Length: 152
Image (cartoon, rainbow, N blue to C red; front, side, top):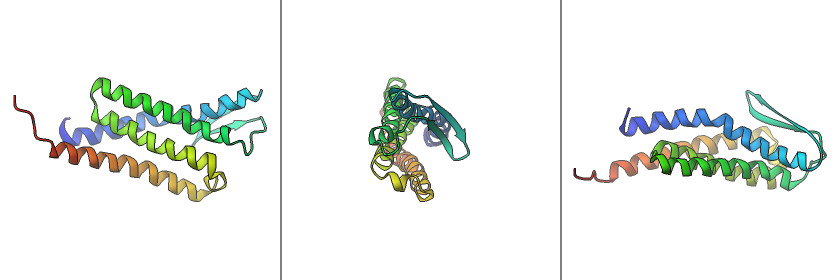
């Protein structure tokens, strides 16, 4: 599948294939701080997403809260670099969408902590995730249509 439909289909396939690894990387970032505090942690997966249980006293620790997003952002940037290496618009779209998502999570989780742990934030985070992927897909498809084809 090539063209616009291929970009859309491949973007969704890449997004869902990389969602759990990027989420695990995010949670592992929290786990590193937990481990640095001298304790152990568990990472789990539920229908709401991944979670981390840290036995150390990290409540209110902004570094602990924000570092998950930093690890997720680092993974997102790796996807962007890989997309450039393989010249994939779909992979670039996914890497950028994950970057927007984890950039927002750094801010929300690290600095708007009380809001982040409400059910309302689930709606906001989901809107950011869907909106960034959809918006980037729209941008690349419109941009691709606007760029004249090179002559052979």
